[in-house]
Image: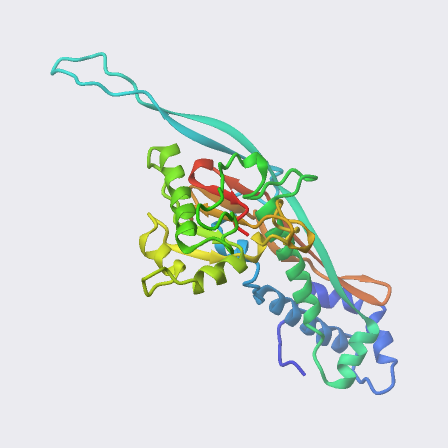
Amino acid sequence: MSKHMHYDSAEMKTLRESSIPAAIMASPGVHFDSAEDASIFFARELDSVKAQSYDVEYPELTALTLFPQSSEADPGAETITYYTYDKTGLAKIIDNYSVDLPRADVTGKPSFAKIKSLGDSYGYSAQEMRASKLAGKSLDARKGESARYQIDRLTNRIAWRGDDESGLMGVLSEGQNIPLFTITAGKESGKTSWLEKTAQEILDDVFGMTKQVAKLTKNVERPDTLCVPSDVFHHIKTLQMPNIDKTVLAWILENAPYIENVVAASELDADSVETNPYAKEGGCGAGVAFLFKNDERKLSLEIPMPFYQYPLQVEKLETIIPCESRTAGVIVYYPLSAMIAVGVS
């Protein structure tokens, strides 16, 4: 059995006052000295499951490891007010006695992001608790891990494509006003998909994206991270440049202006309908490339309340652990610091 010795005294008290310890003690082969001993034992088991649920990580949920995260907003808040800024004014040449100095300032436009709760739960029946004691095994921690995963998965989906019903926005939401880059057919291949274009045609698109950001912002914004569908990533990682012993991926990282990282994101695949608003079932949609500046001053995934597990609740002969998280989706403070290219696969 688990050697975990910690437990929540409030949960132990809730268990002791329920009918569960007595039901378990009445079962043949399951021995406890008292209802209090049984309550402490299962309180320790539940505490161990909770601890494992907090520790579990799922790197395949790209947004949770890629985008800057912020938990500055209070969990009790219903909205986040933020400002997008623009520099105004001018300067001029002055003499020693000038008093009419022009004013330089910053103007801010307020915007609002809603905060919504995400929730689920997991639990154990009296029979499951009885069986774990009888078999000498700990309670199945996979239930807690599954509850954590489902909330993380929903957070990841919102971070990418948002949620129209709740008003939460992701980086690919239309309301973010992130510019779109138009992918044209290659002169040699006649194709738009990077899976069918030549190495040089792919590079032309990548350089075209960085060039468009530079043109729109007078070279103020310098995005450094390029996210591509997983099939595109594997393709450019193996596709060789002509007459050069380098792959397209290596060439991009060495030569594309300011790009420091190229990331494979299955959420951008042409069939990832859960996270890609341009995708369709069966892969007949459009894969997306997302170029952005990985800087919390440019965008952030807002999670005012990270994954939290409430004290257990007892319903008849079952213990239930409610779980909750709160998010405002992704706030993009500088939309021109990013670029979306639809149809790379």
